[in-house]
Length: 475
Image (tube, rainbow, N blue to C red; front, side, top):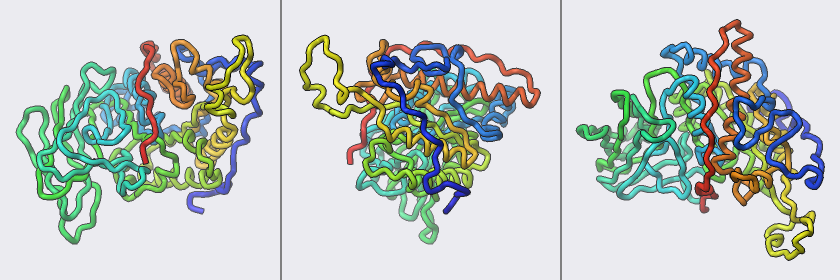
């Protein structure tokens, strides 16, 4: 089997022992006996990390880039690229990481986003402004009827209307993404494709042809546009001559620091990413040149009645092999899924009448689905087998059957669907992950007799949020 040394047919880290009943545990939000769990609203500095399993050398590429950035070296560009589902697609967790780590290591730019505002049902990006005018369409990875290629962003914007526009802009009022020194347009070149016009701010229009010779096969291409470091808007316009196909725009700065690309697609699984066209994704991943690639999947797998855990193990091996082929200078981290909860009685529990002092019947208790532990075990084993790092989000939340506590806590940390988080919850997840990575980075520096890294200032408090809940892409 491709990329397998052992255990590709379902080897797993043994799942943890079942938790005690809810009645004995109280359902509190994310606490355990280790003093290391995620607590919404708690300071990241005060939280001891204990849920990162990083085999020796597995995070060296990331840490080397962080060290170069701390020393102000021009080569200290630490791109952290996240593939994932709606937890990543909402860009709340990744925005928090972007803000926290750029404050410590430097701001190297906002990173890669879609082209303008893609006409897709669910598209969320923070720390950037974007919009569109005219007629455009989007092909979203995994959506029924949408065709390849999807590219590294997981969607492709295309159109035929001359004069239709898309734009992206730095965000002066956002905690990150305030400045840019280079735009990079990712597009598809092919015979019969049209002209792409672009301009920065109110500067004169420029044009690039996305058309190739008839004998040249279609391929991903890019256009780099340097600008003076600062606030800018890039406008893209259909220049006629054939269809345009655009994957996204990267916003970066010519200085050391951290970049976080949030490339999630709502409702998708690891198998989705594995199945897409890696002749496109691999080329664009090589161009992005990350120092950490994160695979954040597992939530949608837990809702799949036909889930094949042995296939999922193979998907991890094959995807990691492809990532390493395209980005050999990147560390890899598998980010385990967080808690989620279901009721055996389903929605009938909402219609059930009971006395005010009566307890919740067992069928109506919110509990973690049993398959989630199996998914986490497969993911953890895949990380160990492939010498990648693994972060156990479920354990960091305090273990199974905690999600309802996140829903009822104040300020609210999770939505009533018992799957997705508010900004309070996503920021707590990000803070726990950054604390764990930074603690391992401190150990890495100590082993190399490097001076201690500057302390991390506590991130700003998270205000309560009722932001829109990401949902599934319509088939």
